[in-house]
Each structure stands twice: as C-alpha cells, then as structure tokens.
Amino acid sequence: MEERQDAMLANDNRTRIQRFGTSPEAVTASVSAERSISSPVASAHAGQVPREPLLLQLKAHWETVRGDNALAFRSDIDPNDLRFMLPSLMLVEAADTLDAFRIRLFGTALVQEFGEDRTGKRFADLRHVDNFEEAYADFERVRRTMQPSYLTGRSISADRCYRGYSRLLLPLTLNGNSVDIILGGYAFS
Image (cartoon, rainbow, N blue to C red; front, side):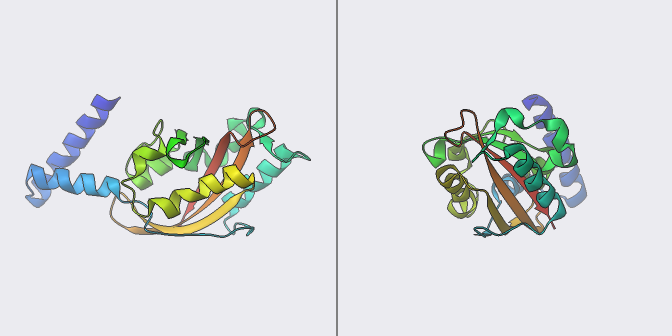
C-alpha cells in the first residue's frame, strides 16, 4: 500500500515538474508542507446543535442508538446505517492522554481533504498539524465529559485552499462506564 502511494506521489511530482518546471526538491518540500497543514482556526460550540444536515442526521442516529443510556455502545453502531457519510467519518480510540489517542478509521473524504491517511496514527504523530491543541483538545473533552461536541473551523486543504468545516464528536462506549471510542463526522463548506 505504502509503495503504491509512493508511486502515485512520484507520478504526481513528475507531472508538477513537467507542468511548472519545478525542481524535484521543491516539489517534495511543497508536498510535505501541504500534508502538514490542517486546522489553523477552530472553535468549539459546547451544547450547540449542528446546522449541517449530514451532522444532524449523524447526531440523530447516535441518539436513537443511545436510547435512554448515558452513552451509545460501539457494538450498536452499524456502518451500513452510516453509509450516507462514511467517507467523512473517523473513529478514534480514546486513551488516558491526548497524545495516546489513536485514529482507527479515517474516511476517504478526510484523506482527500487533509492530504494524508491518518488511519492507525496516534495523536502524538500529528503534532505537526497547525493549531494542534485547539483542533484536538475537543477529543479529550468528549472523553472526560462523556458529552458530544460540535466544532467549526477552517483548514488549509491538500490543494492549498482554505475550507470551512464543521465537526461533530460523539462518545461511544465498550463497557457502559467510560468513553472508549469517539465517532467524528465532518462537513466541509
């Protein structure tokens, strides 16, 4: 998989060199910079209801699955029920420290938007992301409070364009007592 991605990147770099007359070193530096930029501006909206239809639908599904429980069980989340936004979803395994949180699923729309597949990465591996603390502290808040969180912000996408986004984080449990997984849904504008 990694070799295939490297080959695709090499082809893309050759195209950029041919098209723009840029040196291979400059293209590599440009691609590295593109991949390291993510969330320069973000603000959390505690208790606010998302405005975006897909995020509203995701929250409604979570509330239905949760029922009268304090938390929704991970085992009750069926990916088939979330087909409407699978490409824009992420699943994050919670941990005792923010750096130890691990991304278990990073949807294809997120890979395209942020310029890298973050599946399997710990948050400690993402310290290169601009505004890391603001962009990721919300995950710790969801783990600690066991409450959903809605956040809006701007990102610089892999194609170097500013895009607005909204993110909804929903707590999931394995045992009924703690937040073990966080389901995140994104909507881009």
